Image (cartoon, rainbow, N blue to C red; front, side):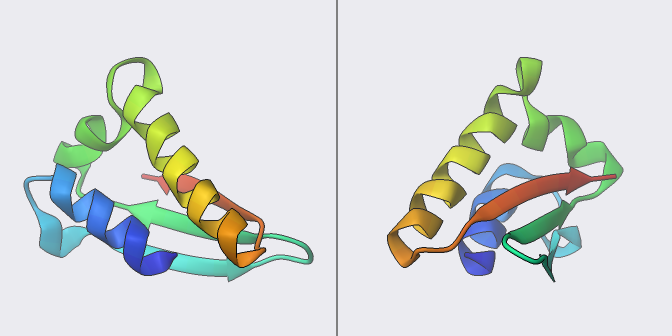
Length: 76
């Protein structure tokens, strides 16, 4: 799942080398924290959060196939 999120985020931004994903394991859920360069934050979030919503949808759909609960946080 981490690799999927990295691939998606790096495809969207101008500075793909500054994209990082950190996995934080909770009691019942895995949280993926996405960090990008400040200049690329708008490209990842999109207008009215549409791109961010679709990124979360794709990662959750992939996680559902593996039986894991996942949430994606976009950190600044």
